[in-house]
Image 1 (cartoon, rainbow, N blue to C red):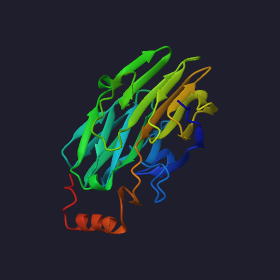
Image 2 (cartoon, protein in one colour):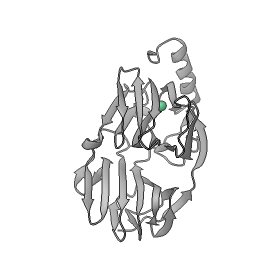
Image 3 (cartoon, rainbow, N blue to C red):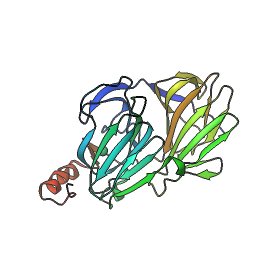
Image 4 (cartoon, rainbow, N blue to C red):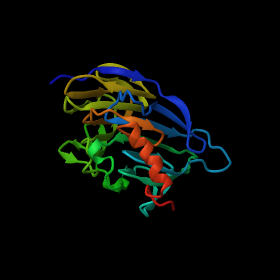
Length: 280
Ligand code: FE2
């Protein structure tokens, strides 16, 4: 077995999305598709509560992708054109497969400390699934296994860890999505298929990933190998995600990611003639 080294490390940059939501973005959708099968990773966090209207993501469409929302603090009230509605709280996960089209709204609300803290990951869909029926998996915190051993605590959202399977299922890229917390001296080691692309987002503390020093806040891409290794002398918490690359050309346009320009034009045709999704 060989350890995956760090291939590149990125300091997230601030961007504003939706209606005045300040985000730390590690990467966004680009034709170059450098993070295949992933398209975007955002961390939304508000350290200084501000008075005023609630900011968020009012009703907007998606096609051709999956959006994965994982909350740490505060919550997100959501509604969509499939008739789903709910409140996503700390530790809850929403894995939304837009397929051919969905309209949804995502409105964050601050937690008791005044903070909203969470992540959104965009996952690409293979061409054969881009026009599939929209699908939606909502998983509450108590359905996410928390596996604690030898100073390592892992929230298992998707994939396999310590002989258990995460609750998110039937996703094309066979994802791994873990929330990992390490105590001092705790060894973390996990085999990841060598053909899968693997990434980590360190958002608390500091330590070593792939044998290199890393501290929060930092997005890391792992290079070739078949095992992820992490350790810390103090405390470190990170999201670890991996998946099977799709290796198809992509054309991203805002909240849509298709394979050709014609397919992007088709999105606007479908919206115009009312066959995209029903507004709510
Ligand atoms: Fe969205």
